[in-house]
Image (cartoon, rainbow, N blue to C red; front, side, top):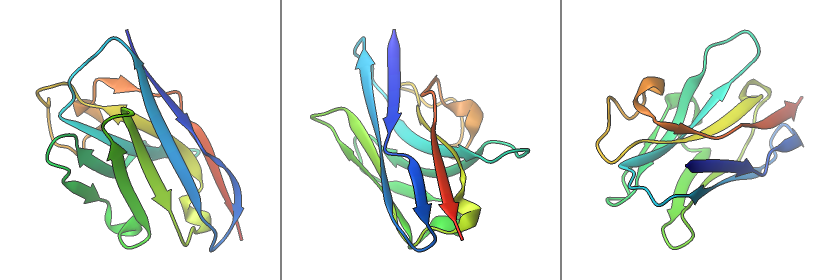
Length: 126
């Protein structure tokens, strides 16, 4: 069984920074890409950022480009999301996710990820 565990969420003032981590454990699995998604109250879960595991290519939604950075440590099997210049509209539960070895769809699509963490709350006050 694969487990993804997020950490690093919390309460921060607008303009501040947080670093989210997502560690995987359980059985060894191959993943084409790992991603971060977020879900605000009353809204659908949306794509934030993704990174391909071997090629180290990165993808971002427009609203976080230049502020968020996704990275990965293959040795630790961990993905990070560095969030700078946070805004109140970034407030949400942030989920990390992993695709299977062969992606089932677009790297930005919720449905193309096979494994999900439990989520971590990020709250940005104005």
